[in-house]
Amino acid sequence: MSEPQIIRDIARYTDQDDLAHRWTLVVDGETVSELWVAIETGEIMQVETPREHQGNGYATALYRQAASEIAIYHAPEAHRTPEGDRFVASVGGETLPCLHGCCDDTPDFDEE
Image 1 (spheres, rainbow, N blue to C red):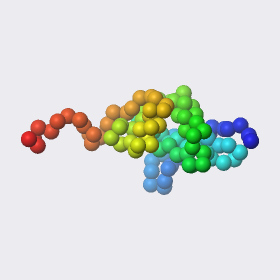
Image 2 (spheres, rainbow, N blue to C red; image 1 turned 45 degrees about the vertical axis):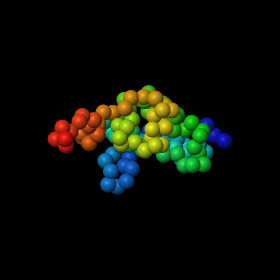
Image 3 (cartoon, rainbow, N blue to C red; image 1 turned 30 degrees about the horizontal axis):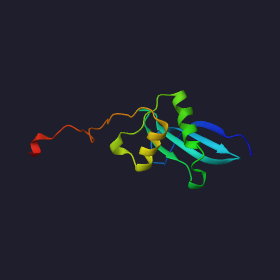
Image 4 (tube, helix red, strand yellow; image 1 turned 135 degrees about the horizontal axis):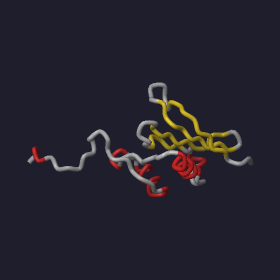
């Protein structure tokens, strides 16, 4: 087994998406985890580790590497999946405030 290698590049998650930072962890030529971060905001957009590679600390290693290179932030709580919440609890770090007003916690007094 070769040493794990972390590769950073700029790519699109899909053809329709904006360019993003991407950190990829490769073991023996196989991608075992990816971390995608928005270029403009530093928001973590996606963390993917195939089931057969989960539990090995690969996503955590990518998070630590990315955070050592640029300012990165977790998605606002209202935008995260349960898996995303577990990732935040595991690695720590700062959360991006909601930038679009869609998860505003202030009371709406017009509804009373």
